[in-house]
Length: 185
Ligand code: SF4
Ligand code: SF4
Image (cartoon, rainbow, N blue to C red; front, side):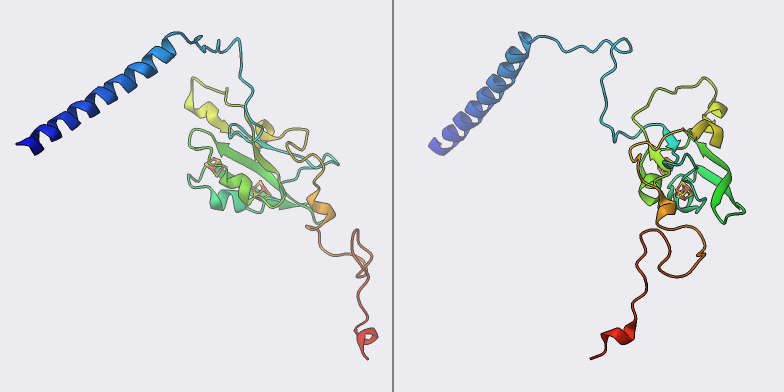
């Protein structure tokens, strides 16, 4: 009997404690200044790596970074990227056309992760609502920007991407080949 009474008292104490805790939270917020952001008059700055509208960037020379390697479209879980590759006379690849269907995009950022040339980047811009679902299909002209996005200095073609022309050791940042015989004792 005494054991039962003690259990009831314990439960009642827990209930009172729980109620007091929740009222304390209510009271704490009752006298706080409300935080209301007046969107769209005030637009809260978002972190640079926020995942919104996608862009296609250019390298510091102003040339398109995308080499139409299809990695972004292969990794995209919703299959919303499509393109066709072409090669220029100087051996540089590019996308003849490049399309993203933003009505299917889930802004996961996997395309950006997969891109070897830092061409495709997600931006903090989330304000592009449309009244027609077909307007969410963005072509290359809509995606291409005239800057390098978050990586202004990177230039893929200074490191790779073109077929080799000239002798070994004569390319930018390339050391002359080692004479293996010079390593012999
Ligand atoms: S953010 Fe995700 S869903 Fe959108 S295009 Fe890139 S990989 Fe596809
Ligand atoms: S955006 Fe990047 S990953 Fe996609 S095709 Fe172009 S170079 Fe390849």
